[in-house]
Image (cartoon, rainbow, N blue to C red; front, top):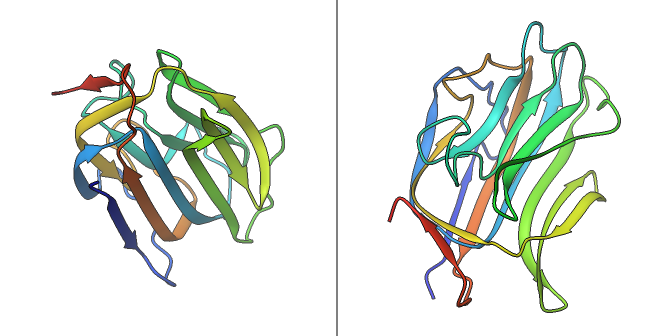
Length: 179
């Protein structure tokens, strides 16, 4: 079983920059966790602001293009989070509440097996704010990890303790992208 596990920005703050590639992952599997600490210092001014974006190479056109991605909503401190879920290239969720400014928040995005089901979940500060079964898991090849993608503005925010873990899902209906 091949597992990918990497950590960046351990105990120091990184300011996402437009188009900054943090890493490339040869094979991003159906079971995964993307976790980091986020501190927003002010609202995104004119459009969504890209915090972290795992993609096959474009913004949101193909399966795996937002798998996952996190943006700060314009004009506030709500998060707009997207992933490939149930055949939707851009299954997105906007946090119902604004995150408090200038304090660290722990963000966990994951797709894990729970009670025999593959569940996609968003967890903020130890609170599950979304949990949905994903019946169309995806294995993506040649994933680019952006800390600030090239399509959106950079956020008024910093991240630290970014960790990405992915491992294979044994499933007969597993989809692939960029194979």
